[in-house]
Length: 120
Image (cartoon, rainbow, N blue to C red; front, top):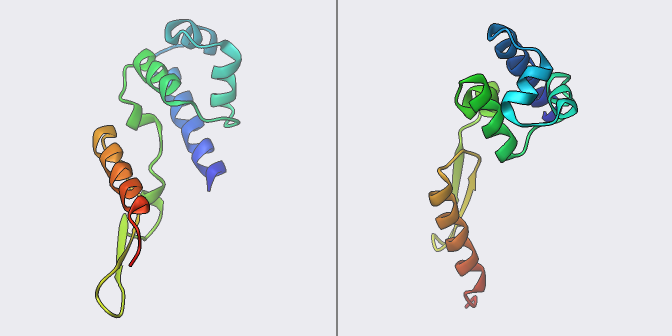
Protein backbone atom coordinates (compact mmCIF):
# COMPACT_ATOMS: atom_id res chain seq x y z
CA UNK A 1 0.00 0.00 0.00
CA UNK A 2 2.86 2.42 0.79
CA UNK A 3 4.26 1.94 -2.73
CA UNK A 4 0.85 2.82 -4.20
CA UNK A 5 0.76 5.99 -2.11
CA UNK A 6 4.29 6.92 -3.23
CA UNK A 7 3.36 6.30 -6.86
CA UNK A 8 0.19 8.38 -6.63
CA UNK A 9 2.03 11.16 -4.79
CA UNK A 10 4.73 11.12 -7.50
CA UNK A 11 2.10 11.32 -10.24
CA UNK A 12 0.38 14.28 -8.58
CA UNK A 13 3.61 16.20 -7.97
CA UNK A 14 4.82 15.60 -11.52
CA UNK A 15 1.49 16.59 -13.06
CA UNK A 16 1.26 19.80 -11.02
CA UNK A 17 4.90 20.63 -11.68
CA UNK A 18 4.33 20.34 -15.43
CA UNK A 19 1.08 22.30 -15.27
CA UNK A 20 3.05 25.18 -13.71
CA UNK A 21 5.72 24.85 -16.41
CA UNK A 22 8.37 24.00 -13.82
CA UNK A 23 11.38 21.71 -13.98
CA UNK A 24 12.55 19.72 -10.98
CA UNK A 25 15.35 22.25 -10.46
CA UNK A 26 12.89 25.16 -10.48
CA UNK A 27 10.57 23.37 -8.08
CA UNK A 28 13.53 22.69 -5.79
CA UNK A 29 14.54 26.35 -5.84
CA UNK A 30 11.02 27.69 -5.24
CA UNK A 31 10.26 25.16 -2.51
CA UNK A 32 13.69 25.54 -0.89
CA UNK A 33 14.19 21.76 -1.04
CA UNK A 34 17.15 19.87 -2.46
CA UNK A 35 16.91 18.92 -6.13
CA UNK A 36 17.64 15.24 -5.37
CA UNK A 37 14.77 15.24 -2.87
CA UNK A 38 12.39 16.55 -5.56
CA UNK A 39 13.69 13.82 -7.88
CA UNK A 40 12.98 11.13 -5.27
CA UNK A 41 9.41 12.42 -4.90
CA UNK A 42 8.79 12.57 -8.67
CA UNK A 43 10.20 9.05 -9.13
CA UNK A 44 7.98 7.67 -6.38
CA UNK A 45 10.94 6.63 -4.24
CA UNK A 46 10.08 8.66 -1.14
CA UNK A 47 7.32 10.56 0.61
CA UNK A 48 8.01 13.97 2.16
CA UNK A 49 8.02 14.90 5.81
CA UNK A 50 5.29 17.26 6.95
CA UNK A 51 7.50 20.33 6.56
CA UNK A 52 8.71 19.28 3.10
CA UNK A 53 5.14 18.55 2.03
CA UNK A 54 4.09 22.03 3.13
CA UNK A 55 6.99 23.65 1.24
CA UNK A 56 6.27 21.59 -1.87
CA UNK A 57 2.55 22.38 -1.83
CA UNK A 58 3.25 26.08 -1.32
CA UNK A 59 5.67 26.12 -4.27
CA UNK A 60 3.02 24.45 -6.44
CA UNK A 61 0.25 26.72 -5.19
CA UNK A 62 -1.90 23.90 -3.80
CA UNK A 63 -2.95 22.56 -0.42
CA UNK A 64 -0.83 19.69 0.98
CA UNK A 65 -3.91 17.47 0.91
CA UNK A 66 -4.07 17.85 -2.88
CA UNK A 67 -0.67 16.16 -3.16
CA UNK A 68 -1.08 13.27 -0.74
CA UNK A 69 -3.50 10.56 -1.74
CA UNK A 70 -5.96 9.45 0.90
CA UNK A 71 -5.62 5.67 0.95
CA UNK A 72 -9.07 5.36 2.50
CA UNK A 73 -10.62 6.53 -0.76
CA UNK A 74 -9.26 3.39 -2.43
CA UNK A 75 -10.70 1.06 0.17
CA UNK A 76 -14.21 0.07 1.11
CA UNK A 77 -13.65 0.34 4.85
CA UNK A 78 -14.99 2.97 7.22
CA UNK A 79 -12.65 5.50 8.82
CA UNK A 80 -13.34 4.00 12.26
CA UNK A 81 -14.95 1.01 13.89
CA UNK A 82 -16.30 0.34 17.38
CA UNK A 83 -16.77 -2.96 19.23
CA UNK A 84 -18.39 -3.28 22.67
CA UNK A 85 -17.34 -6.01 25.10
CA UNK A 86 -19.87 -8.69 26.03
CA UNK A 87 -20.37 -7.19 29.49
CA UNK A 88 -20.83 -3.71 28.00
CA UNK A 89 -18.11 -2.18 30.18
CA UNK A 90 -15.37 -1.76 27.59
CA UNK A 91 -15.07 -0.58 24.04
CA UNK A 92 -12.48 -1.14 21.33
CA UNK A 93 -12.07 1.83 18.99
CA UNK A 94 -10.04 1.54 15.81
CA UNK A 95 -9.52 4.72 13.83
CA UNK A 96 -7.83 5.53 10.53
CA UNK A 97 -8.52 9.14 9.68
CA UNK A 98 -6.91 12.53 9.31
CA UNK A 99 -7.55 14.88 12.21
CA UNK A 100 -6.51 18.43 12.92
CA UNK A 101 -3.29 18.34 14.95
CA UNK A 102 -4.97 19.78 18.05
CA UNK A 103 -7.68 17.12 18.10
CA UNK A 104 -5.15 14.35 17.38
CA UNK A 105 -3.07 15.57 20.32
CA UNK A 106 -6.13 15.49 22.58
CA UNK A 107 -6.91 11.90 21.51
CA UNK A 108 -3.32 10.86 22.23
CA UNK A 109 -3.47 12.57 25.61
CA UNK A 110 -6.70 10.73 26.51
CA UNK A 111 -5.20 7.40 25.43
CA UNK A 112 -2.05 8.06 27.47
CA UNK A 113 -4.12 8.97 30.54
CA UNK A 114 -6.18 5.79 30.12
CA UNK A 115 -3.02 3.68 29.84
CA UNK A 116 -1.83 5.08 33.21
CA UNK A 117 -5.18 4.35 34.91
CA UNK A 118 -4.98 1.25 37.14
CA UNK A 119 -7.17 -1.61 35.93
CA UNK A 120 -9.71 -3.04 38.45
